[in-house]
Length: 390
Image 1 (cartoon, rainbow, N blue to C red):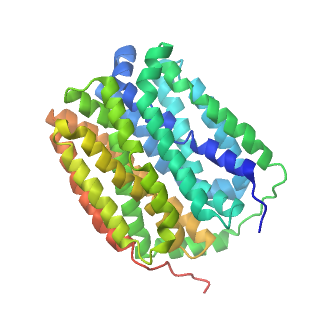
Image 2 (cartoon, rainbow, N blue to C red):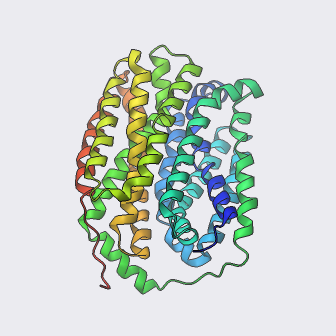
């Protein structure tokens, strides 16, 4: 058995600590940002939707970057960019905040795509448990960032310091991962071989059901991440209470999600788990229509969303039959999926402005969650993408 690489695991987990908080901590601070920077709804919409748009756009560049520089050195550069952007975006008004957040989003996009490959390469015998651990870390970090953004801002004297605290794990991740790149040899991948594998993925119907499932669950998560605090404040909650509910929503299902993610290999088909998780999300979205049920809604949504994310990652890794196919399927799912999430997040806020109510945006999320259920039923069937070399 290959010797366990503790530093590699630590580097991965430190990296995942900063793959959501630089985005998740912005939503709860929207009210303060509007007041301090004199932002309108269009500017707020850009600020909250641009990172997710970058998640999608940057994903498509990942394969080319990795083929050129190697997967380990690519992650090291991304860690440096994230750390620099977290610190640099805070001192130049709205433009600086938007530019820095854009760089962070693009860096996170590439990291999202390459992390499954890094885990497979470093921990080939522990892929399931390591993947479940880092997805749990993503969820916990996002929840912590969302629930503490407002209190930290109040304690330290402003939104800049609330966002700046995340430079610490970013720098730590860079320092730890720098020990993992010195002795690694990069092996070039044949462009012809990659294109053959990529074509087989693009032509498979399985791919597009997975893309749809991943995209809808991402849209629901990021729409709430960006707008749930504003929705709850509109319903009478304080900023701190709204941030707390968002924190509960992102953390409630984490233990169950990790347990499910570690045991998905026991299921012959993922259709039933995907449908149940999506059904919970649909019910929770519907409960948001009553402000008095916001906490219950957050818990139910949390259970559903914390389950659909590991299911999505598992579908990506198990429905492909080769490493090259896995990379391509990950690129398409996260690329198109996050682009859909970005557009949906922007439309969600736009519908609120047009209708002067949160009812229509919430109903849209209910309908999309129901569609996600159907996509999960189809994508979860026990089928794989054909291997063109077989």
